[in-house]
Length: 173
Image (cartoon, rainbow, N blue to C red; front, side, top):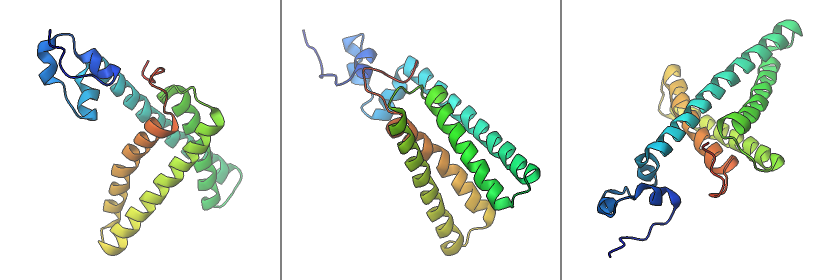
C-alpha cells in the first residue's frame, strides 16, 4: 500500500485520516495551522485571551497613571512611566498565566518578555520617526501604523519566543 509523503509533525499527522486527502494537505506553516479545526479554535482562543490581556493592560496603565498623577501629584511623564511599568508587569503575569499558559523558567521568560517589549518599542519608534519625518504622514496615520504593527509583532514574539514550549507540551489547552 502506498504510504504517501512522510509527515514531519503531529499537526500534519492529525490532518491525515484518509490517504486520499494527502494531496489536500496545506504545505505552509500557516496553512497547517488553520487546516485542522481544533488547532484553529485553539489559536482563536489564544488570540482572544491576548486581546483581553491587552485591554487589561491598558486599564492597569490608566488606573496607575490616575492614582500617581492625581493622588501623588507626580508630573505626567512620571505618572506615564509608572503606568507603563504597572501595565508591563500585569501584562507579563497575564500573558504567562492566562494568554499562553506557559510553564517555562520564570526569570528566563521575564527577561525575554522585557526584551520583546523593548524590541517592539524600538520598531514602533523607528516606524513613527520614518512615517512622520520622511513620509510626512499626519499624526493619526503614524498612530494607526503603530496600532497595526505592535499587536501582531508582540503576539508573534510572545508566542514563539518568550513563552514557547516544547512540542511535547503544547500551549493550547
